[in-house]
Length: 184
Image (cartoon, rainbow, N blue to C red; front, side, top):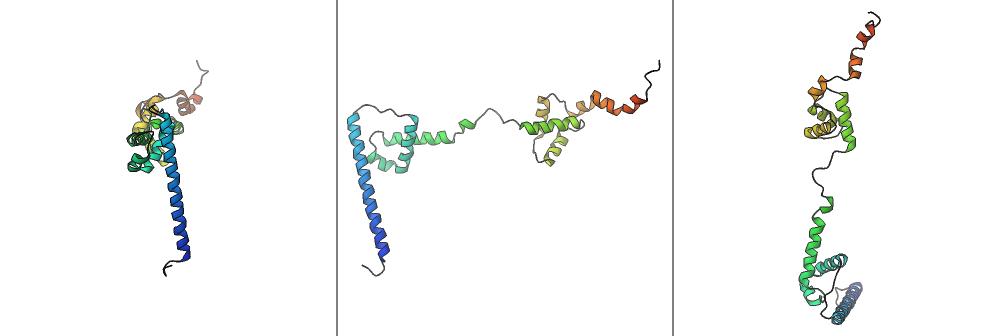
C-alpha cells in the first residue's frame, strides 16, 4: 500500500469498482433480453401509446444518441430523440392555458368599480382609476371604461346629467316638505 492512501479510500474505490462492474453486467443482460424479445417479434412493427413514447423518449435523452445507437433495438435512436423533441415542444407550448383574448377582470374588482361609479357619479375613468390604485388595484382606464360599458353605465358627463329619483328627492327634500300640497 502506498503511503498517501488510507484504508478507507481503498475500500471506497473497491466498492465503487464492484458496483460499476455489477451495473455493467445488469446493462448487458437487459440489452441481451431486448435482443431476444426483438427476435421473437420479428419484423412486425411495434405500436406504442403516448405514455410509452414519453417514457422511452425521456430515458433515451438521458442516454444520448451515441449509446442509443449501440443498445436501441425496438426503435431507432432518431425516432426516440424525435419523440423527445415533440415531448418538450408539447410541454412548453402552453396550449392548456391558452384562451382567446385577455382574461376578464375579477368579479370582485368589477363590483368595486361599479359601486364607485354609482356612488360618485361625477367621477370619470381617470378619477376611478386613481381611487382604485389607492385601494391597491391597478387597472387601465380602458378596463374601467369596458367594465362600466358592459354593465350599461355611461361615462361621467352623461352619468352626471341624469339624476335618479333617489338623488332628486334627497337634494330637494327641504323644498318638497315646505310645499303645501293641500292648496288648490
